[in-house]
Amino acid sequence: MERETSVGLSCSGSVAILQIDNPPLNILTVAVREALFRRIIEVENRPDIRVVVVQAGGSRAFSVGSDIREFPDDELGGVAKIRFEQYLLDRLAGLPAVTIAKVGGMALGGGAELMLACDFRIASTGAEIGFPEIRLGALPAAGGMKRLTREIGPLYARELVLLGRPVSATRAAEIGLINSVVPAEDLDAEVDRLARELVALPAEAMRLAKRVIGSDALWRQMDTEEAEAFGILFRGTDLAEGLAAFLEKREPRFNR
Image (cartoon, rainbow, N blue to C red; front, side, top):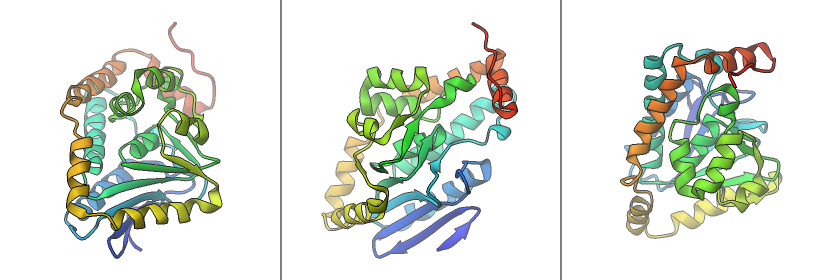
């Protein structure tokens, strides 16, 4: 597998594997996100690729999201961070190829947002999916609230975002967050089966169907609202307190 800054890209026929490998938790550092963006551009320039499997190395986590130590310290930096992440995930979601998230282990925060940007999501039975940002005084603003609301409706989106509690893969399937759950030992085979089924279908009809179903035309305003909301958090003290408490391994003392 060709590698670049903890992100690999390999191809077998019309199927590409995009692998994040930043053990043990596959944290999406700035460097990893930038490398992921370059890999997405490579896939965009490969019309022979019909299916992209997005996966991560190891069994503990698909990804637990951002590196807290890299968080910006002001509103301008916060908005810039979110805008780049929105752009990255929009480019992934907009690929002509069909994308499959292979979720083994935890998919939290930015990792869950990455999963949400994929067309299909297959998880192992031990996987956990969640958006714990609010417990740090933050928000899943890289398209997470937009895609959650669109995919599973506002009722369950509120539950996941406002409580910040992770859910099991089984529960995630029940609320429409993922397509299916399989035993960990069957995850590779199930994703391979789905990829082969997709490749066998007509390419042009597949691209057109994906484009229409995935249209964000009615949801674009939420990108701006997410970025603005994330920026506003830097005007108060809760975000700084939440990040400090996380790094110091203590309970945060939020304003209530």
